[in-house]
Image 1 (cartoon, rainbow, N blue to C red):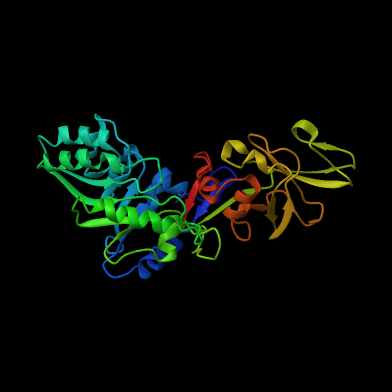
Image 2 (cartoon, rainbow, N blue to C red):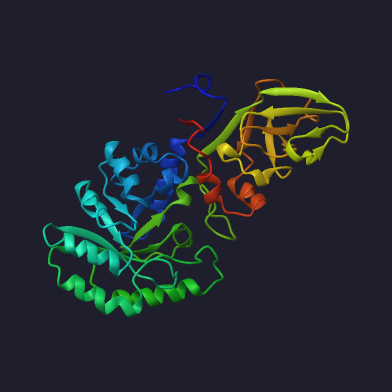
Length: 362
């Protein structure tokens, strides 16, 4: 395993033991017969899908879900043998590739189902069928159900292993829309017998909206982020994003910092430059709008975040030195804090950390 000094002085540490504990905590709160589908799409929300998939034990994780077929193929090529589910959509040429890699296809509409049925004339195909209970994006609608049922009945080599849906606002415990979606899903799913169902995402799982025997699809909660709009369902954060002070300089009062001169020192100031920027996923909207940890103390980002550099004011941390570690995300600086400062959600904060930031696993 690489050490920090073997790589650029900006890196993200991923705590694999914390991931295992989070998996155990989620499985421990499921009702009898329910199982976990670990959602590791988008490179496990930037945490590293292959490394986390290797930590998924078959007695704890029933399946791993990805968004893209390429993501599932990457896991297979890395030696991951757990059942895989691609949430799609797939083009018709991708369908045989999915089957060759033992990837279960999540069907998102009648068009995709038609293509799968054509393939299923000559080989066995297992699918999970998505129903649109109110999200309005993917999934079979009520008026499409008769056509879909007929296609399934007329394709003997097609096996529907599960039926599923996705909640629009399960993160808000006060919104009755989730209960309406559950009722609609139950009514729609009665037309297609299937041995398993899955409705609950991270938020619904943390709220306990899981029927015995159902799968749950959990993503962001596995990584220790908050899935609910209110309350505290957070497990252990896995990721600490760190860098080092690459330049220290003393500047007089009235000195501009960075592009556009958006910050001007009001006093003699000590400014530290960090070798990280929006090219690494540190959002430009954090310009003059964030804090980092230097020697465990918060200090403000000053000036514009540029592609490769960030400047922070360490005047009030006189012991700061060249090469000191700086925490961008982690410890007391949460993904939710950065999301609030940039008008987004923790999911995007994680996903924006680019591949040019090395991941170190411990």
